[in-house]
Image (cartoon, rainbow, N blue to C red; front, top):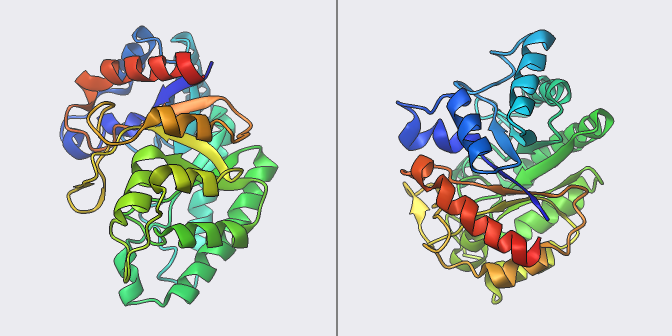
Length: 298
C-alpha cells in the first residue's frame, strides 16, 4: 500500500492566505483522518528554513510531527523570489536552494521540489535556448548537491511556469541527465499540459493519448506523484485548477497503473488541493477517494 500525504500549502495560500490554518491544526486533522504524512510548503506560516533557524527548533518540529504518527513526504522549497531564467547569475538561486536543502536534511525530508520560477511569458524577453541552458546548468548543480545530501530532486512542470510543453519536459530531463533528478507527475498538470496545451507559447503541443500518453513517455523519469483531478480549466488563468476527485476528467483507473510502473525509490502519493477554495473541508473526501485508489492499485 502507498503512504498518503497532502500538501500543506493548500491551507496557507490562495483562498487561505488571509486566514491560514495553523500548522498544529493541520497535523492534528491529518492524523485524525489517517494520513501517513504531510508535504510541506516551506514558507510562513508553516515550518520553514527561516522561522526554524536552529537545529533545536527543527528537531522539535520533527518530534511534534512524529507524535502525530506522521512523516514528511517532501518539501515545496520557497524559491519563487529568485531568478532562474531571466539572469545569467544563478548564484543567489543556488544559495537559496542550499538553504532549503539543509532544511531537508535537518528535518528528514526526503525530496525537494523545484520549478522554473518564471512564467511562460518570459520568452517575450529571453530566447528559449538561453533560458533552457540556464535552467539545465543550474539544476545539474542542484541535483549533484541534493544527491550528496541524500535528498531527491523533483521538477514540477505545469502551465504556470516556463517550459510547459511535452517536448520541453523531455528535453530538459535529457539534458540534466542525472539519476537524482526527475519529474513530479501531478495529474492535473499532466492533463492541462497534454490535453489542453494550457499557456503554451506559440503553437500548442498536445498528445493524442492525453495525460496517459504523457505518463507513458515519462516512464522511468517520474520520481514523485501528486494525485488530484482536473476539470480542464485554469485557476485565475495561471495554473491548473486542482479539482477534488470526481469533479474532473482524469481517468485514474487508467492513469494510476501506468504511474505505478515507475520505480521512484519511495512509496508516497501526495494529494494536492492548491488554490481550492474549500480545501480544508474537502480534505476528508479526497482522502477517502485516494484510499479507494490505494486499495485497488497501492
